[in-house]
Image 1 (cartoon, rainbow, N blue to C red):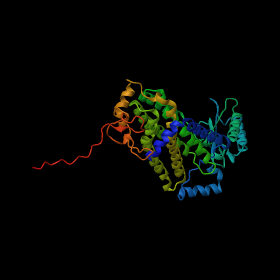
Image 2: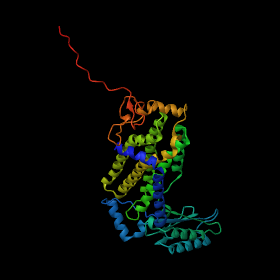
Image 3: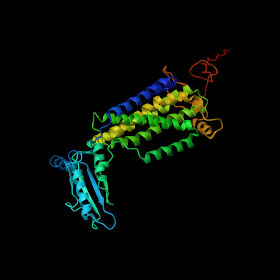
Length: 404
């Protein structure tokens, strides 16, 4: 494994343009596919075999509207008036009748018949029932209901629309994720003391996350993907994406601080820290896939979706990141005398020979960093591997005995 990763890291460094173009093409394909076909997430969470699920199944067959999405029309009369005033009552009842004829609506319940009026008689609540799930509700149907509610806003009467029709049926990125990225950028800049070094883990993590999430949305056309799966995949994929890239980047900078050639350092970092990334990624993938054991469909989908983004994070870390090392060259090397340079030297033991772990060379020989002894290139400057500073011991000769 270490030999393969070492060769992969050097290959990515040398052919960095091709590796970068390949990942960009993959992003373009997923974006184009999503723009063409869209997504089809399932908002229904089922637990087969449970009594509650059996009750829901019976209710769906007998009264589909009772298990579908709902909307609420809220009417509020102005100060000093009530919804019982003839003018307001007529507007409310007309609006409810229009809502019952709106697209995809099963029925609309009059608030006066259902007695859903507040104690002060200023607020009335009308229920609008749809016999479908949220993922089947079209945006035009929601817009039509909003226009109907807007026509009721006359003479100070307020009319608002709410309910589960506004629930999220797809991937939603909120302010929390944005704040998290901002904090990550600040921490990375303070840690590495370089915008370039701080940006690489975020860039690779976002690329892997984007491909994983877009691919998941495309898969929703051929398999059932719950609407909650992308949220878990987003959180897990972003976290491991930054973490895995940091492992390899930190090893690379440590070796550069010791004076190692950038290409050799990229190969060694991928062969050593990359091995830890692959092992950690496989462990997380197996753990997430284990959610399938419980037999609950939406949990199984959530686990497999998150496992897919972890797989993409591992792939990006061991292929795209070494290619970006090639574009950065020696600019990732900490500046001499800087705090980052002193820290990297202290971490790496002061030189490239002590800054990497055991890896086998492509020829099957143990390369210089697999031994704890000091190495030098002084004897064979053209050799790909350094040579030991001390000569091997000569076999001892038998001592001559004097006879008298």
